[in-house]
Length: 502
Image 1 (cartoon, rainbow, N blue to C red):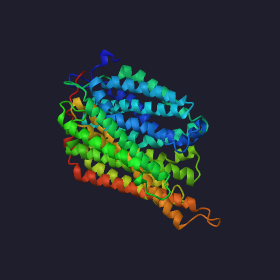
Image 2: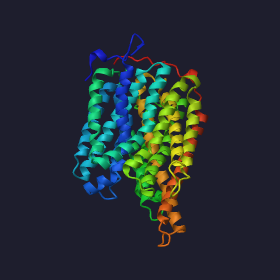
Image 3: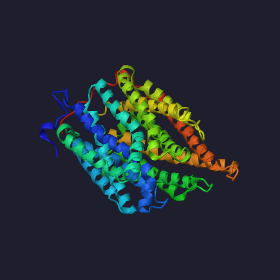
Image 4: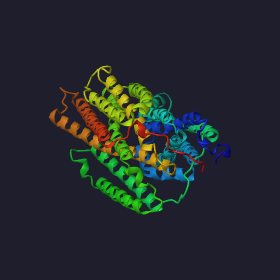
């Protein structure tokens, strides 16, 4: 599936001449994956009404995607390394487009859930392959920082753009276009990638670690599903603790056991799915921990802020999407600045500062009230959050992947995305629990009466702002983790990765 003329990422140790064009193509599909995580959220009410999906089953529109995406990421990364990153990228993009088309054509909930699961499966191929290609295409430290600035801007700001696009498509077209919009994007990307993006694959032994693949795929899926069930129990809570939900705890327990078993296996097999040297490296391990905490805290912003705009302030889907754009603006500014600063000051100062900025942004949002003017709290809070995410994602991506042997680029990319996915699932469960508890307490202290009809909205705001506060705490812990664990300086980010043709 590759053009032999383009099967080299470097010629005679010189950078691949079309690397920036290749980055532009890859960036389009990365944006497609990021958008898909939020573009459907705005459309959930319309989808549920049209297909007759019950409130209890509604969460599967999201969960079917996150389960397969999170579960297959590490396997997808290894497939990219061994089978070829360009080949995996092309198959992932084509499969994602077909699954999206199927989702748009869905006539019942079963077909829609199946399409979402297929999207997640092919996304788990496309995501690691995309990031691995960026890693091997850019070997100069300064150029790599700029390339990861593009990735960081997309990863940090794409979710807000997804809310806007989902609102526009749902309000002015049809919810089905939230799926169909992926098809032309993927087609254009595949056609361009076929000619522009070079192939690369791991050299040496490329035998698959089947036991490890089974353990981590089922383990991660079980963890994600368990934490999703906790969040679901929190949202349907009647005052009891969602953490006492038996099935949820069972799935979390099974997930933990399988992940531990996976680690044991990886230390013993000759050709592991996840070489433990990737995680045990102090700087890279610190980057992965930071990514997990940022993933957990970040969910508190877009999910709860979108609910605040629509359910409390009464914004339309489009207005809610526009109101979320300041985050994207902050990310773009910070990502561009970070790309210039990483080669000069190293990753650690920026990651620490980014965590503090992002935490300050969510803490600012915790002061939102029932009728707080947008310009007073929501705007500055979102700008701070965006600046923090931009300053965090660029050096984090650089640090997590720089210095990785060419054999392991896909695996390292997959770990970075997997920990963010697992972090987001844990964060959803934690913050939903805190939010529902705060809402319940508020309603018990101030029950709704004919004389006080705003009590339910006041309780909702209390729930959202509590989630923002705890999200800020998670991001602050991420900043502290970066400060304590990461020791790499600017001189530790050399361009030592020689890329060989597969």
